[in-house]
Image (tube, rainbow, N blue to C red; front, side, top):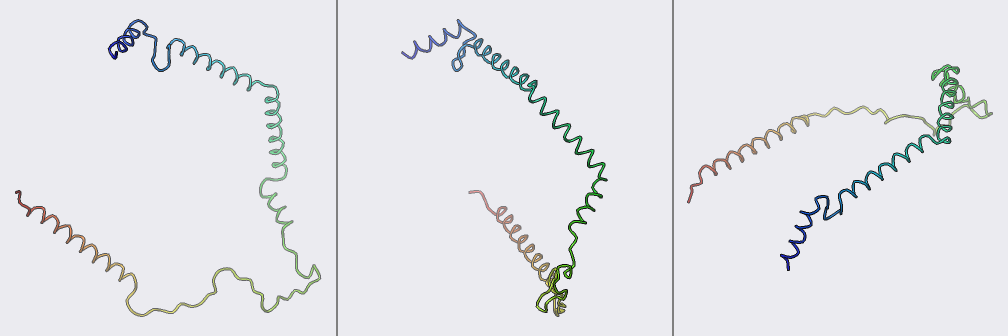
Length: 157
């Protein structure tokens, strides 16, 4: 039974070189691919040459040209920044009819309060860190060298 099936598969391959077991006929598959590719190309060209799209693109370029021209006429970034600063400058408190003196419990401060640090006496911390690194390194080298010695001392049995 298996022999008959394999013979039919082999005979099909020998008769039709263009047949693929998974996809079917190779010529038909190539034709389908070409047809799909042609459709994609047609859709792209239609989309790109659509009148609405061309009109939107023209409006967009005109708008950005106008914005650039207004930006240049206004004096650039420095002039625009000065205008913004003139609008956002704080007004004095007495301009609103309020008292200009700040209350005693009110303070404005940036950062931490300046407190003088006390000088520590004794050995600095960096010395302890460096000493620990040296001790760990020496111990690591000792362990590595002892493991190498054990490998050399083992005798074959």
